[in-house]
Image 1 (cartoon, rainbow, N blue to C red):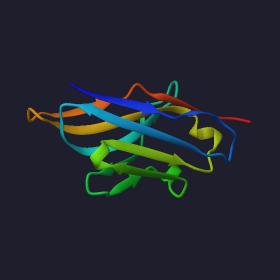
Image 2 (image 1 turned 180 degrees about the vertical axis):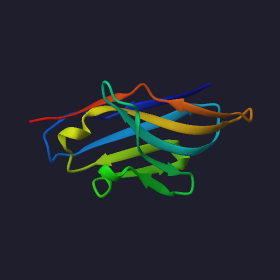
Image 3 (image 1 turned 90 degrees about the horizontal axis):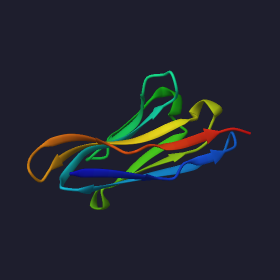
Length: 120
């Protein structure tokens, strides 16, 4: 019904930058919230950031000042610019969206995840 497709990610040295993007498609009426989680083995999934349809944002403390989330509502796209990356940012990053479908359902959708590795 709704799909999220991510791009970006990869291997970067400490202090480097990466940009992730995610595009939603399907039976979408409106996307209320889009954001990013991350997960590492043995740890719970962590909310990194989200952005509301109106542009309000929230970040986990560990990425404030380094990561910037943005969205283009007309394209159902959210992006995450990650600067000054640290080894502890290494994780699988998953796109997340809260979507009101054309049929009137409110659904939570996830991307497949993209690996970010910060290492020298």
